[in-house]
Length: 245
Length: 372
Ligand SMILES: Nc1ncnc2c1ncn2[C@@H]1O[C@H](COP(=O)(O)OP(=O)(O)OP(=O)(O)O)[C@@H](O)[C@H]1O
Ligand SMILES: [Mg+2]
Image 1 (cartoon, each protein chain N blue to C red):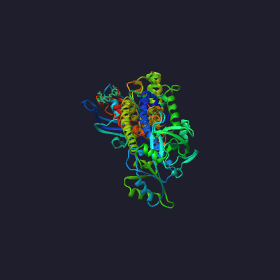
Image 2 (cartoon, chains in turn yellow, blue):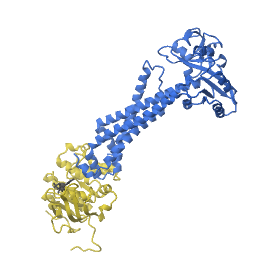
Image 3 (cartoon, rainbow over the protein chains, first blue to last red):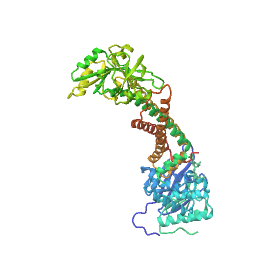
């Protein structure tokens, strides 16, 4: 048991009866999702294709509005925030399922672009982008454009971009989908380091059992619902480390 | 990478679009600058007539289409001379005549020899013509140089062969490019006995020039006083029309240009839907997206405006060289024309880019990202 003094800590991410119907469809992409992720926790979501994993991440990133229900990030209801843009820029790092790089820009510029408008100098942007690309083992490839990179390399550029503004929360949609096992190990190690050193909260969608096992907790989804009965509960012990493989 | 660097990169990357837009801007700017420059040229060469007579102001007939069509008769001249505050007047009859292909609008001034000094004319060679000589003339030193004429030469002008008895200088190149004749000779040839075109007025010392002008305009409603080139429109309606045409075409160029720019921009931005979705998804503010698109437009506007000014220089030089227009069209490059070109370019681009920019900024990021 953890000794708790005062009120329980506010979860990093909390969804309450989160429901989403896409316009013009009768499918409930999300159907009353209850999920709570503690600060510094590393949670993996798995589930069959079309069960609503991407939809969930998009709603948490304020990229889309729920049909009903609530998303709270660091205790704030997303409906009350003035600017989803600023929220994404300052609090969230996003890795898209399709890596979505700008094909005309170099890997370096693709990472820097997320920092434009985020109170950084040009020099800071250059240095930070270079560090991040090195962290995902892309040193020497900074000047390559996406068409000159492999699928896995592009994915790692997208991960570097998501980390550019030092987000408190990383939302990643199949970030290791195209990676070989060596790269997967690198990315898992990077995530673990970010979590341990910077206290980053990580919520990722994955089909890869290796990546899922590295998480503190695995949440299963099916047909827009979370199927684990206790998934909404924060079970993470903030002092604990990730369970070993 | 800087934000500005990204804007420049986008301009360079979309080369076909950029070249097309810059050319559209350039054509509009060219039209506007060329019209302004030609209008300015016409105004200053017309106004140069006023500068020839060293006077405080000039009196002309009101509302004529060309100031050279102004006609003031003897009684009117007398009335002007008798007006309070007027110290002296010089009435001159001004005509133009085609001498040869290179001089389609040769300036001919009829003036009494006694008024030459008051009019600011210095005889630099030979002597002045006599008051009622029928076949005597003086020629301006620049015209003499251009046409290879000396004192003693014979010259066909004002409907007859004349002997050139003197060469004069007025200190104004426009005046020095013409010829002067005894007033009655020009009146007779043009069948306007007793009439003059313009009356140049010197006011008495210590009198306010504008009060004399006011009195003259009040006493002679059919006449108007002109002191500056800008007041020229009071007498010269052609110039007013040219000015109006220049203004009208500026407005038209901005509207047509804005539509062309807007269309091209919309198409080109449509292809970039995913890019804008991505920028918004990684946290770019709407205003930044708008600034990005406007910035791309503004770079093209400045490049287009520079090209347009260059084009207009080429076009006016070409027009001036046309045999039909030689000697008539003078373009005068002023800073105003340059600014107007820049405004046109910027105006049409901002107008044309604003809507596409706003559309790009207001795309829903997710839909934009899944755009094919
Ligand atoms: N823009 C949209 N319009 C309509 N329906 C949509 C839209 N996006 C997703 N859906 C539907 O919502 C449901 C959930 O989609 P979602 O993308 O969240 O699934 P997913 O779990 O991420 O699947 P995958 O593992 O294949 O990525 C699916 O049935 C999908 O067809
Ligand atoms: Mg998905």
